[in-house]
Amino acid sequence: MKFLPYILKHLRRNWIRTTSTVLAMAICIFLICTLRTFIEAVNYNLKSANASRLVSRNAVSLVFNLPIAYKQRIENVQGVKSVFALNWFGGVYQDFKNFFPNMAVEAEPFLGMYPEYILPEDQRQAWLQDMRGCIVGRKTMERFGWKIGDTFQLESFIPPYRIGKPFEFVIRGVYDSDEKRFPGTDTTAMYFHWKYLNESTNRRTGVGTYTILINDPRQAGEVSKRIDAVFENSDSQTHTETEAAFRASFISMAGNLALLLNGIGTAVAFTILLVTANTMSMAVRERRNEIAVLKTLGFSSALVMTLILAEALALGVLGGAVGIFFSQGMIKALPSLPFIGDAVRGFPDLGLSPQVAGLGFGVALFLGLAAGFIPAFLAYRARITEMLRQV
Amino acid sequence: MTQAATFATTTAVDVQQVRKVYQRDSQMIPVLEGINLKVPEGEFVALMGPSGSGKTTLLNLIAGIDRPTSGNIFVAGTNLAELSEAQLARWRSRNVGFIFQFYNLIPVLSGLENVELPLLLTSLSKRERRERALTALKVVGLADRASHYPRQLSGGQEQRVAIARAIVTDPKVLVADEPTGDLDAKSAEEILALMETLNREFKKTIVMVTHDPRAARKAHTEKHLDKGVLTS
Image (cartoon, rainbow over all chains, first blue to last red; front, side):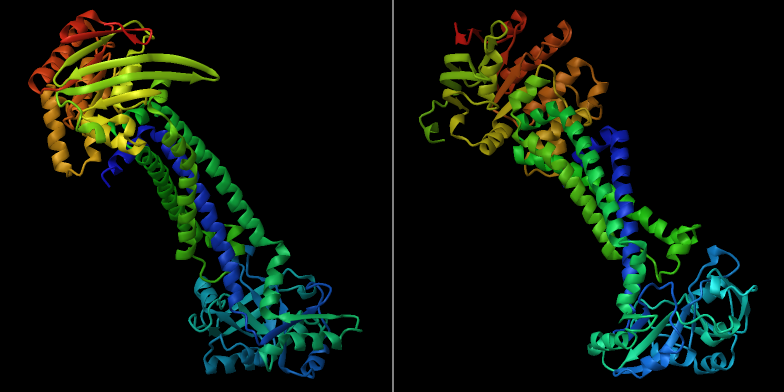
């Protein structure tokens, strides 16, 4: 501790260089924390997937729908408990920036299959009895200040669902979730009757995906194979997988997101490592005379090395703290930003977790230590007389 | 350490058959050849000689910041050749004070903090360190400049702070490498007077390298080096 003022005074010596190094490191930590949070949010979304639920889609692509008649045939497959049709509606509320997920579902089996959605009985009944009715997640209700009984319109950007006018909906229920029992449950989505969609489009929509509840989650692989075997010789073959696998593949349509984001973070971290190492080398080179003096006064080589490493570590601590601070601010602000906000708004509870903050801080400390190691080691090895001679 | 018992207690520095050779690429450059030198305790010795004669090298060896190629050096009863690098560093912090030609103060530290620096290696409390550093500054007559930074001091004042730093741990031996070499005549005179005081009143053994005959005259003894050999 008694050496701390000495270390801090050296950091203040060339404050422009110190500030720019701290900022460079802060940007690196900011990026790592922000990108990592994004990946965590994607992964968190997968947590809510239930092992007893399968999703069956068109084997060619999610873009192509499946025939309505498949429902009954899937229900007859051994191990299947219930099935409902789901179509991603892609409805836009007033403007693209107001995006929230909205889907057409077969209400009764849907509610039966998703115990994570908590809906009061009277609201459930009200929705089931109203063809134009819908249920909306708590977060979206709060976002737009809606209340039960309100009406709103959505217009889909998906061609088969464009009928020349917007779809009109009446809010019949607000669903919530128990985050402790069902972590990762999205309360931003809106669900309406699949029948309403089907009839409004003159029964030409088909089914986007079938969600299937099975009797035994351990049989998920077997049941999936059985379902796909049923449609093996059909025009529209199916691809059935667990809900978690489906969501993961849905996300991976944008490429290997995690790999891309981790790659960016690593590249930035490596660049900052070089920048910081250069800064530390310059700082130590400028102080060869002082290092010689310290050693002459009786500072051991190990102590001199420790002081330089501590200085580099202090840069890491400062850079890490600043980076985490700004990352937290950015993550909070992300949902309200144009374009990016649309992409992240679907993630529930987007926030900087202690784990991600810890990772960012750890990376900052590592960068500081790694950057300071070579100059510190050179100072450790340098002989007093050689350093004094070079001055 | 084992030879400490046989070491004459009145001898502060005993250089025995010391040879120093530098290697530059494949070339061997002898700098000191068979040096023998005894400096009694409380002595003020001036090492003189032309540039390249090996004065500074000998001083560095006595201060324990360099090692001889062969021979032994006893300082304050310790055979420096027997000490490891870490032991030598610890020994320097307790037994020798070094005064550089160009003061070599740490620019980001105040005068007081510069003087306090060697005391960071001791177990003294912060208050004790400050008290001792202030006392050392009083000895050199700069207590009123304790909070000044090196850039705010004149050359002479900087050198006095450097002397305070050298004596703050109360070492037995002071080594000075041309302490007046970068000063004007008046400041040089003040520094030499201060060194005389340290020698006379505080009984410090001083070994000083100098080119300046006036500085050498302040010493009790003059030793001359030429081409790595002590000539007188």
